[in-house]
Image 1: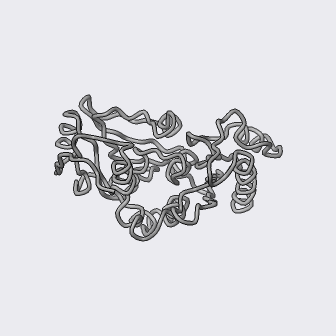
Image 2: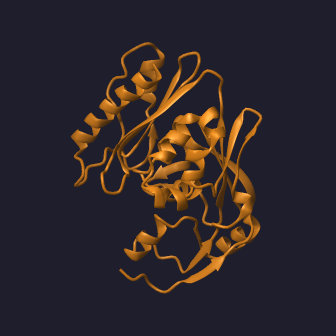
Image 3: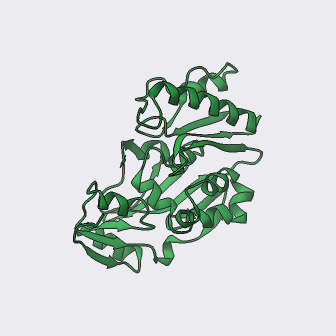
Length: 267
């Protein structure tokens, strides 16, 4: 399908990108989510601002006890990073299961989080890991806890002139983590994705993608597990998705199955 006419601009710095976004542009990183949505007329920006070649958005490093990942880091770079494997294997494991090699080599963590597809993998990963998403806009820089970032279906706390510049994740000694995913065979999106981080003291955080129209931390399941009880039902109080791939009942069943698999992996 041929898309509609639009302007294309390439930003060389974060400041330049923010200026272009403030003028009504839409950020383009890897483009694997944005371009298809434009072809379907689900997203129709007048101007695309290419942020894929901004050096400031690259890099993976440690800052004290936090793992810092540039918003322009690709899924492949994160999956292959020895530092990520050593400090937060959850992210390397999750990134390695995104799409196919073409998607992993072009798609970025910042682009995926900004797009906020409820079936994408990164939302569950950053939620379970208690990550902070750093964004820069016309009014400067601000830090958004992952638990406050996703606000609805394809909706986030990002302002139109803001760009995700970093993802910062606390790293704790002795913690264990895993990401268990039931993937749609063609797209590799998650029909259910369950991420768990278990701290050295046994406290766990549990997050899901693909289950609801908004990625979520399952605080009811966490409360039960952290008080020594059985996890109980998954997704209580959430709006469970139902589509041609999986009914609401089947998704809840899958979520319970993959929760158990994740718990066994960090036991």
